[in-house]
Length: 118
Figure 1 (tube, rainbow, N blue to C red):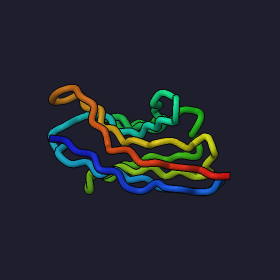
Figure 2 (figure 1 turned 120 degrees about the horizontal axis):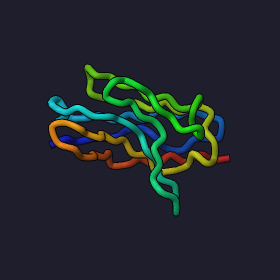
Figure 3 (figure 1 turned 30 degrees about the vertical axis):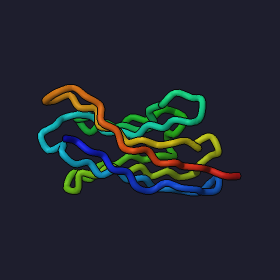
Figure 4 (figure 1 turned 180 degrees about the horizontal axis):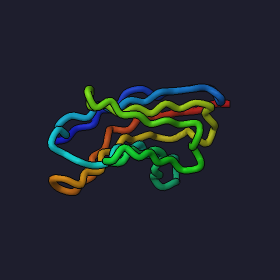
């Protein structure tokens, strides 16, 4: 059974930096995309960074140039480095494994709060 466990996050002032990590277990036979999503109060969950199964990176304009996703295959961990944080980056952040093979499915981390203060 695949499991995603997040660490990092917390409170930071605007303009500061934070790092998030996500350890993935039970995925050795799986193929899929890995990514980070966030959900702010009264808003839908949105994709903010993704590495697809071919290694292509994808970011929405709202975080491009400020957020960086990386993957450590040896440790089965993905990271999200966030710099120049803005008030509007405040949200609960989730890591995700979108599996294609052997069976389609979405697996999520437990979520971690990121709060950017003025």
